[in-house]
Length: 95
Image (tube, rainbow, N blue to C red; front, side, top):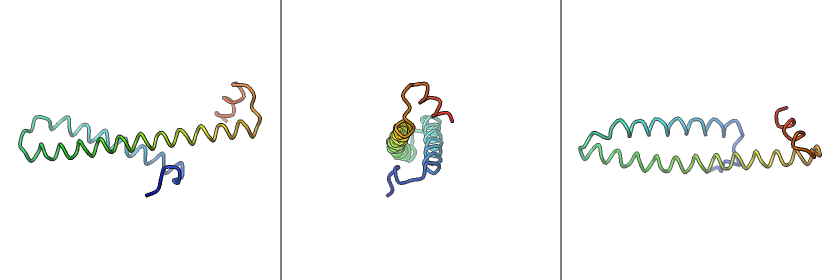
């Protein structure tokens, strides 16, 4: 399996967005089915809950990797262009 660092940034961002959407939908499904008490529903809800926990952990891992990449890119740009002040760094980030 590829790690987040091996993916292209656009692919990574799309994956994070898709994963957030799936998590939101799964959370809504769990919320809307909590009144069903049959064993079948409860087993399905338990499995979905476990998958949701795993998805949340994976999302956190991807977001951490993305943040680390962004911080490293900023550090390298600051070194490359010899940005000495916070103002120079902020202006570079937005250009």
